[in-house]
Image (tube, rainbow, N blue to C red; front, side, top):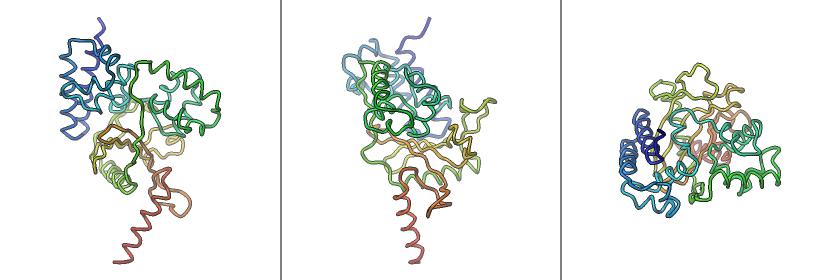
Length: 290
């Protein structure tokens, strides 16, 4: 007999806690997922009914369920998936995920992932409305309308949660700091590793993962495992930084070694090159002053 939705969510929350513990995440975060798992396991009512009637606010009213975990439960209820757990397992395949949306084929899915650096259906829906999806080659106005409609059907009319990028992103200096720490520890071999599903036929656990918390930001950092990174042999240079704040507003960025222009040879946050230039300029000024 297939487990009930409550049982499935209970198990997934417990699995996330175990994986976070194995990967060296903050013990308080591990405990939070375990307590949330216990809360869901004790529910006598169907959690889907609670979501349909009260949305995310109803989940937050439960013991040990904060905004972040409530948002995760919403994703599980409305899509049947939990992106964060897939990421922790190394089984996340955003290109395959995007192909579940009618009108998006393999090539377009790859272009969306490479251009926008997103990996969830909620993030794709946000991009379809805020203009970012129009920047992907081959996607015009009519196609975007079709994708919006398809996502609305896929995500379900009961969805209350909307993917939201943080109004304030982590400072560039902070991102560069966690990137430096990640690469240093990865090179020393002191980080736990996972076996990504994509481009890993031997199922080898080669991808180092770092969980960190800095200045009220929560980070999960790992090397890029995209097709483009493999094609250009940059899998150990390009670093993907996932971040969210205490309100569980999510975002991600990619840090690379610049290959052209005034920042050649320096680490830069893609899309925030001007801010990176100011950071390095300030560092040069401090060095000259000493």
